[in-house]
Length: 254
Image (cartoon, rainbow, N blue to C red; front, side, top):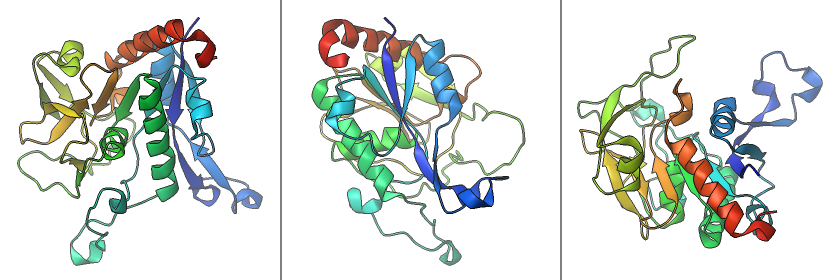
């Protein structure tokens, strides 16, 4: 059987949707980037999108892997960071959804407790670190690499904007080789690693781009592999690890 792979998303006001019937404007909508589900399916998994109400161990007991996706900043209260600074003062105004933070951190912790594979993408990579007690860089300064491009070019995917050097002997290097060019779409980054977390990849300016838990099927990537035209190796890896989970615990997984 194909493995069932859970995917997190975000919740937005229906009023922000173009063309929505005004009678729905006071409602909320769940949002999931289709590219994540498409890549999971291409890799041989069955994608299942989880709303905020699906954060408990009962859900994790019924899936074979978890993908934590990209999005807004993690509430700094959760990792001891500074409060948001209004952009009018020259700072970076954070966009925060605490309910999403709590739901994703809960899912990550339950997934780690059960031992199923976890893939963190961009924000999800940061959520993984925070869930394990790590901290983040509140806002990246420009040290020769622009990690968050504001260029608005319609109808194109993010470019491979800089290289990442991956540590020999790590899961990330086994999947991507010693060096790989990635897209870049973030203004925060992993700072102090959480409990058991190993940094396995950095950009040339030292920014953390990959983390993992040695000996466990857990990987965090700061870039967006789902935005690549080709299937990046993290997705076949996740699907294969999920098959192992399903085969080793078929009753719990169903």
